Length: 88
Image (cartoon, rainbow, N blue to C red; front, side, top):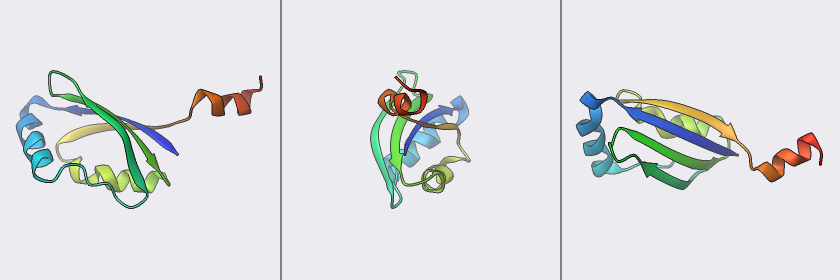
C-alpha cells in the first residue's frame, strides 16, 4: 500500500525539526519502506512517498514528529491500479 505524506514545519519548530532529523533521521518501522522524499527550499515543507503494510505502520513512523510538525497522510494508488476499478 502506498502513502503520500505532506508535512508542514512551523517556522518556530524548523531548527528543532532539522536538529532531530540530523540526530536520528526518519526511522522506518518494520513494514515501511521510503520510496522518495523531498524538502522545499524554504525548509518548511516536505513531501514523501512510503510503501507500508498498513496505516498503523505509517502512524508509527510519524508519531515521534507530531510535536513539531503537521502531517497530512493519504493512501494512494497507481493509475494502472485505478483502471482495474473503473474499467477501461
